[in-house]
Length: 465
Image (cartoon, rainbow, N blue to C red):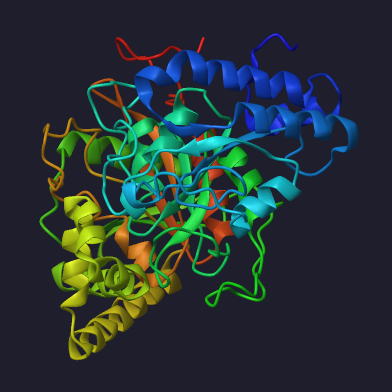
């Protein structure tokens, strides 16, 4: 085994050691399974751990393995189907469901030599900002177990932050990859619409949900995104030219980066916003042009239109059927029931009006990208919060002010940890027209930042060492 234990190594380095035979898939998988067994009782990152299946897959890889993820353990959000392994979607309705197929994203992880450790916690159908449901205990933030890791990919983000998995799969409809990544001090990527196939999920918005990686660094996240990207005919929104590769061009001297505002009275902490802005501006040290042109993107009308469309979308795809049976409806968590009911009240005229608002928002964003290559801002304007006990519908003001717009417009965005405020992680979000540009800017900024925020260090948090 190398001097550093596997959970302290980046995923790209782990896979090199695995391919070179310096580590074995069984050795690495056992290491992470043992960490889950030792630490997850306090964090509740996982709903289901597949120790037997993961080790069997690891042994099989040692006999005849290959692929870009060769021997790398991956945590999969419990919203995506896993053949022979319980998939609940965070819902008591599916508490005991064991599917007989993999979601498209899981198929690709396995085909690339990745090993599924188990299923990470998610709120019901990914419809809450915190990782709370009636299937498993609420996930806790490794930096401070009295705070939430966010949602809906909170189990995946907390697992990566605590060193329980080197890579994790998440999904994102208004920030559900990027918000937990920010709160947990790890990296998350929302791919642009149509890059990663969405076949095989429990819940989500056909128009706005993206599936993407969560990892401890940009290069690790890009490694998983390369595997996930590509056309699948089972996804009606898929792009036939969908592909992603780690950018060969690493310099950013040609990039124009702009700071932007969401155009609403954002809830947040001025210290967080100032810290993120200062971190984002450091990209100029790598040669990029950084500007603060007073750019405003989105507003309250835009947010309302997004909510109306995504609620109606979820109602049509899933909510209508579940609400039709009073017994089934009673099993839904309060916020999910509220949002399904709200979606059922959206009229055709209201949906058409929201589409018009979306068109204008997309055009404003396109105009901004004509002037700038990358748009930077806080992923979220405050650090991880402690939610009130017993209230399943409370939501922090302004939590998705900076994140929903990328989903609304269908463009990629990367959340990169960029420092600490009061000992808790904060993050910058970078939006671009293409994944390659967003990732290139994120990698350059990551290289410049001295503070590495992917190791929880708060009192009482599980140490990575």
